[in-house]
Length: 342
Ligand SMILES: C[S@@+](CC[C@H](N)C(=O)[O-])C[C@H]1O[C@@H](n2cnc3c(N)ncnc32)[C@H](O)[C@@H]1O
Image (tube, rainbow, N blue to C red; front, side, top):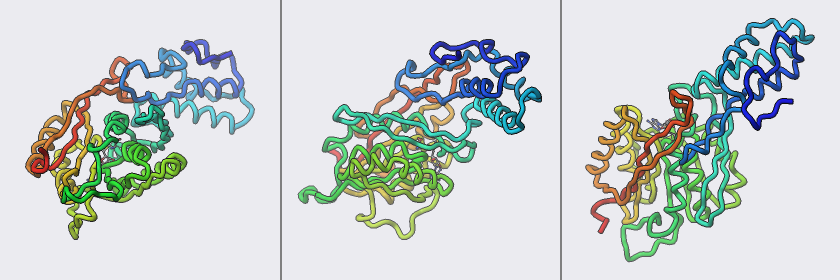
């Protein structure tokens, strides 16, 4: 009897020389399914595999190479080869993983946790928004701490006029939507949020908003999704009513053009009100440190200043060279218009 409680050795699985039944092979291949690592703020949230990794690749390739001649049905043979190929591609790294749905728990200020389900299509190098990245996980877990005034409140250019309308929020480069959907659920009726990304990413973003409709309806959240390309200057420029009180962005910098494009997008879309805020979190990966530095400089040149910032470690779902969880240092920051800060 195969039990996933203790990691098995590959030799505990049905061996081809024993001519195992198709069902036993399918069950064994299901056990070898690799779930992506769970994101976490500590390394110990990572769940180990059901089967020790030694020898698994050889086991899978031997199944793919076998004619499985003792099995009766072509369909069964095909299903076994397909499952073995899928298990092999999962082991080629996250980029080769098939599409999957993942569950994220987001803390609220009441101590309850909200559960979001996000679909992640298969990832390729030019559609990075199909995956949920570690800094968005960290930022979504930080959002409940920003709930109480005066951190994030509707913005007004006249401090003497109390503002009653819901907070207007915009997410840039929303990807699978973890940050924006968490924000929407946490804020409920008190905010509206528009989740944006490039055209190839928006359909899955909209799908993820629909996947979480029960939670969003329960909290009264108002979410829309749409295209917003940072490389395009909005025309005509948004009016103050069309601008946003809060702009959110997680892991937005990974090419030399991104700091300029991103800040050039924040400029026209951020409300000029007293409480306008930009909230970001991004990994401090060595290769992208110049972009982070340029982003800080450009935000400053636009007239924004950091109100609060910090660093924290998260664990990405990419494996490190030793097969363990990969620690990633991330930087979060909250910005406001410098001339409006006391
Ligand atoms: C590394 S992913 C991060 C996605 C998500 N925020 C997260 O952290 O999981 C970067 C995102 O920025 C988006 N992006 C890149 N260039 C963009 C542009 N010019 N305009 C709008 N979005 C862009 C990508 O499509 C992708 O969704």
